[in-house]
Length: 308
Image 1 (tube, rainbow, N blue to C red):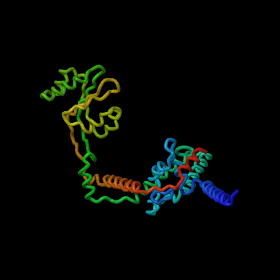
Image 2: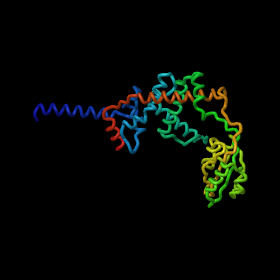
Image 3: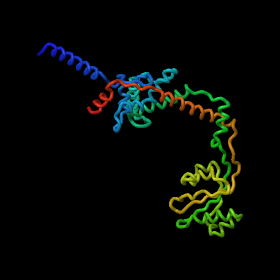
Image 4: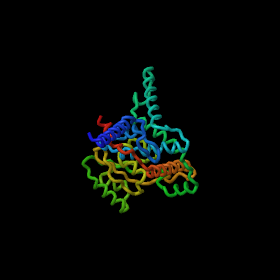
């Protein structure tokens, strides 16, 4: 063999062996990427590889909120797992604890053993609560007042809503409601118009308050709760299906005691709401700004592991 050919062959073998050695040394705790400067282990990426889209970029995008949460907790001095290895050890310890409790006949909550992805999600939820507390910023009084004034759908008090309820039997056309509406618009009383149109035996008065939102008469029929909250006085709600037994027709006669809770009574709830919304915006912005970097050949490594 020619001398130059031999040298080239030896160099090729050396680099081939080096590359093979590097790949063989990889394990689930090896750092193969970073998100926003925070290291990401191979095992974390593998957790987020799904059966339909096995690209590492897709997995890393899904991982971003988890990794950024961990990074920010570290930065702010919050408690979290420093590395994926620490998480993995805690996962193993949790399942060992569950197994030990079961062996002693103790009751455990949830499954006998937690999958890695489930435990990862559990720990992330706890991390997010801690991070929210660390990042929380109390809204100013002006912000609280503006939110109260602008969000008029919040803190409403419905008082007592007085309605007439018509139960139309199967086969009865809802056109009769149009005739009743026309009669009321012409100045006729509800009772007179209902009797004249043959609805007298199908209609009865009913008053609703906030406590009725938990009553089956409200919870089991789509549209009843909306009518109690929003139906203007003197208006009919659209016919509501009575579980296949005709239709429910609601007419709002009057509303008593409606309004809003005073601002001072809503201050604490508003503060929590605004802090949660601000945290969500700020955290989403951190995730959006995070630069994702992956080692060369990560997709090849993932595919080789998946196909083993």
